[in-house]
Picture 1 (tube, each protein chain N blue to C red):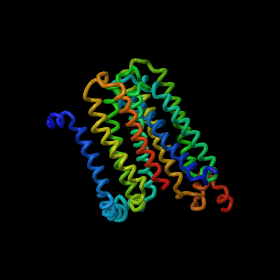
Picture 2 (tube, rainbow over the protein chains, first blue to last red; picture 1 turned 45 degrees about the vertical axis):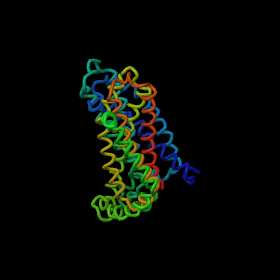
Picture 3 (cartoon, one colour; picture 1 turned 90 degrees about the horizontal axis):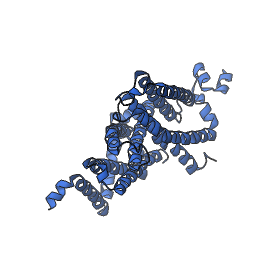
Picture 4 (cartoon, each protein chain N blue to C red; picture 1 turned 120 degrees about the vertical axis):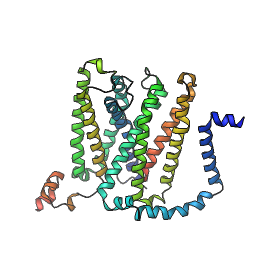
Length: 170
Length: 195
């Protein structure tokens, strides 16, 4: 029903993409602050604390719409190499966010007003930026069929994409 | 009197002139006359320009640039939300809105430049299709309106005096208008993919 309904699918996909502005937009502002690229005169923890709520709201909407998008086309997504890489990057991004948050809470508060955060937090911010750029790129690659199961003959790629039928036929 | 008005409100007068020109262009059906003459440019963009060639020939390059376009739009969204939610008094209330406005504007300008550059590349690859899409032209108008609003109205007004001297409803209206315009730019951009 989700796929066949022109508007239901489009609204779902559009909501998933547009909440990027709220979730990743807020997250990038926090990361940029840690690197001293935006709002260097404002307390870094204040930025992180206050942007936490819109970021979580954005991510929640993205997850709900994302789960519905996968539910609507389960086989295409689960057998997509890009989807699988995206999921791995998502897990890594969340581990990095957890580590980053713990480090920020544990850090001595004297750096809070400094233009740039201490090195471990800056490293965490750069890793976060790279991982989320990767998540967006992989999400963008999913509709393309370059490495779809019927088009691939390489065993490693077939295994990585979970193309069971093609692997059994070899 | 006119010269003092123009010197005090140069940016607003420029924007009003542009809006008036657009209205006149529409009213006298100049757009309808110009529109067909744009088709050769769009065809050249797709089939003869190097960006069109890259986009058509290398799908992976096209998809990567599309991802860059999405990321730059996300950063625009982040800066717009932080600034406008502060002006609305929703976020970062204990930090002066002047600090937030100035601190995010540079980032907004960079991400807008990246999104325009990547957007041109994305449009070049499908130029012959987007030319016929009303939603593409709505997006272009929204982008023009958003950029004009940001650089000719919002920023000059917010930088002209302390925000405490600007009426609270003016600040709220600026914020709501800004969120609405940039949401329209993003939403119409997404809808191009469905058309």
